[in-house]
Structure formats: structure tokens, C-alpha cells
Length: 422
Image (cartoon, rainbow, N blue to C red; front, side):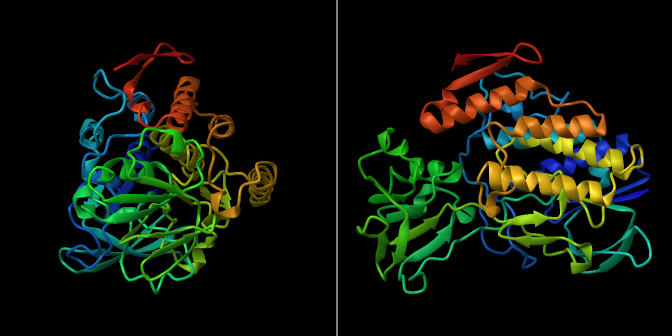
């Protein structure tokens, strides 16, 4: 069988490894940039690259991971021993290179190759993939038996609409283009959003900006140790030419608006014949958030959020390849649709999530999801200790942003861990 993998970041690398383990005869991973690592590859560039394509990476200078390395590692491939759990981004990238070198994955990757279009072949279960070699400018059409989409979900900025957006006379940008705090020297910056990037950005620019106006609805943040120039505000109602009006009726001037409002899933290379749609950032119809129900030799690795990322990428890959390789019989289309409808009930009705958060898992559900994949495909599960560390970290992150990275984790066994202060 011939397998096409789109992307050579964290998900793409483990997809290559497990494709080798599952006996695929031809494995080709297409990577738009010139090295592995996806969003973990830092670049000063923003906007477009030399080929006119969108810069993929959202990495900024000085980033420390907000997940401990113990849950960022792939199963059976631990990080090199070190005292700290929360590590610099450079160490994460070194880990991916170590993983790739250990399993000789680079030989399967075509760097600086841009996937233009993917569509199902007429009259067969295969796929037609058109790829551009960016260095030579040549286009190639290749047929594959299966496709794993591993292009990440931190590269296409989500910028919500606000009334008055077009009349604001200052600078507007997304955290995707944030590289360091110097740009915000002596500015009054309106930061919208309090997710991981919002918290990181505010904690950095508060030392150089004149004022930071922070629009969010996390009541715990106003009691944490931000500087006096950080002004907590409610949701933005509308912009004016020199500022913003908030939901509480107050008004604040600003010179820069920085959207820390997350990302949207983007698959511009998928033709409509692939049978996949995206409505309100919900990708469907997918079985278990990964297998394309309409064309089940295509799967998406890494869509769920608030999960143990690399552990889940590895699990999803093994789950999908178990069926795609024929080692286990694929569920019928009706069975997969029934499972999707049940998942919708859980996410949209029981958990009361909006459709745009359909792929959000998090505390109380992510471990249920892992166990389900492992049971159905009869594969090795994620060890419970990994999920337990993740939930401990999430609670710390929400309760005290300035201290949660001062804890280190040590795994004792498959269920238990201990923590130490570092």
C-alpha cells in the first residue's frame, strides 16, 4: 500500500513511524518548509514566505511549554533526562529531531513540497494528490491508497468579527504574528483572549507597553500577579477609530489590537469530493474525530484540543492505521455515523459546547476518548498517569499562571506521579 502523509510536524513524524511499523510499502510525507517540527520551528518571518505561501509557524521568542515534557513525549520515547518539566521551545524541537533520527524518518519526507489538491480517484478507493516542488516549480500528480492529514491546527488565525473593525486607525494583528515584546514598546495594547497565547503575551508585553487592556472573561485572572498597567476588561462590543467599547459600557483607548483568539482548522488542499466539510470550525463527518466516514482511507491526526497532544497523535495514528492497513475490519458507514451522532449528543447537548468547540475534549472527557480508541482498535492505550498529569497541570494553569511552571513531575508507575518544586 502507498500512504501519503501531509505535514512533518509532531503528528506527521509519528505517522511516518507507525506507517513503517504497519508495513506500508511506500510512505511519502510532504512538508512545506525545509525542516521537521511544524509550529515548533521558529522564524522571524511573518506573513508570506519566499514562495508566497503563508508562514506556518506561530512560535515566538522565549516560549516555555505550557505542558510538561512528561505528557509531550511520544509513548516509549522519553525526553532526555532533565530536572524541569516545562522546557524551552528549542528543547522540544531537538526532541523531534532526536525522534526522527532514531527511527530514520527523514528519508520518507519531501521537504519544500506544497500539497495543492487531494481528491478521491474515480472508481477506486485510492487518492490523487497534486504536489508542487517549491524549489523546482514542478507539479507532480501521484496516486496513493490512503492519506493521513497531519498539517496542524496552529497556523490559520481565527479573527472574530467586531463592529467597527474597519474604522479602527491603529494596528491590528493576531498572536500568530507575535515574535517578541519589543514591537509594543510604549504602546497601549488591547489584547483579546486569555488562552495560553493571551496569557503568555500579556505576561511579556506588560513590562514594555504603556498599558495593556486585556479583554477576557476569566474572573480568576484579575486577582493574579500582573502589573498595575494591565487593565482587565469584559468582552469587546465594538471598535472606534482609536479604541474599544466593552460589554460593561466602558471605553478604552488603544493603539494596537492583538487578537489572541485561537486558530481555525484549514484544509485548502481538500477537494469537495473528499466528502469533508467545515462549519463553525467543526470538521465532519469524522469517526472518532479522525477517520473520514465518507472516504475512510483518509484520516485526520490531531484535531481534538485540550488533550495530551503527542500521546494522542500517536494513539490516533495507530487507531487509524489499524483499520486502513486492513489489520482490522473497518466499521460500517452506518456504525460510524451512529457513533458520530452519539458524540454530537455528548459534546453539544450533554456538555453544552457550542459547535465551534466540538473537538474540545479536556478534563472529564479526554481520557474517555483515549480508552475508547484503544478498546475499539485493540491497541495499547495511553497510560492513565499521562492523563492524570495533564489534569493536574490544567488546574494549576487556571489557578495561578505565574507559578504553574515551577512544578516538575516524576512518573512513578502507570497510574501515579509525584511533583517537586524547581
